[in-house]
Image: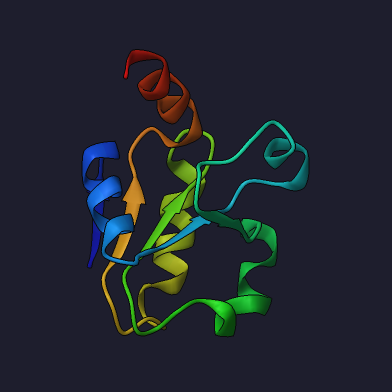
Length: 100
């Protein structure tokens, strides 16, 4: 099951050691990433499934939330831990950071 989360929930999950994965393409990642994230482009995800932690929760994000949901769905049957999709993606993160 995939759960949509917001930034408050993300911060809690990161404190608990969740894996945060940015699935945007290289040119988008050049604009910046959420602190603590690692980059695995959605287009590369099928080939790198083994690099996704199976023993801890995983949170996916993209620009707005659509591609990260696709990534979460791709990984859902492979992973043995909870899978999350960050609602609003990087755009919502930028807005969140401006307001905090």
